Length: 135
Image 1 (cartoon, rainbow, N blue to C red):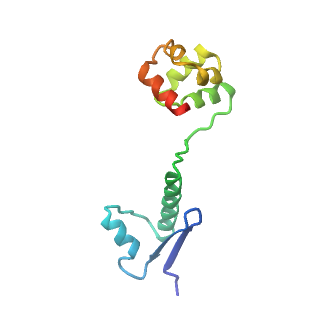
Image 2: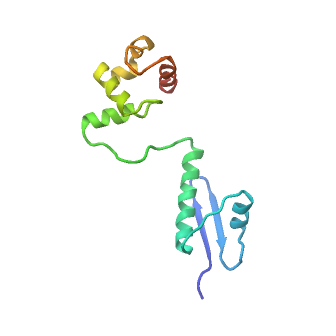
Image 3: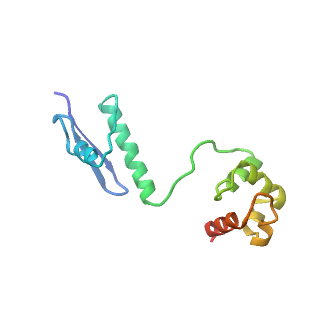
């Protein structure tokens, strides 16, 4: 007899999600439907993988941590630009300008408002946003 009952436990938050596939509508499906959240999956295994991923995202977001994803640079210059692009409203172009002007990430991070405003593309709003993150 196939096991139609699967559970997912996330120890960090002691969250347990159970789905019983023997019933047409399980408790979690009913809860998700009531909240307007519907997940479509290919199979029982895929459903469990999706639920595990959703649980992990819930834990990350509830901890207030939103990790940056994607390419991780290997070269020094790329790493420096990557760090600067983590600042609010700083994209690839502005990060290059900041690094060109200040010569190091440390100098950018310790620059005062007057010095930051000397960089083309940075106005008072961006300075305030950057300083707020660095406090």
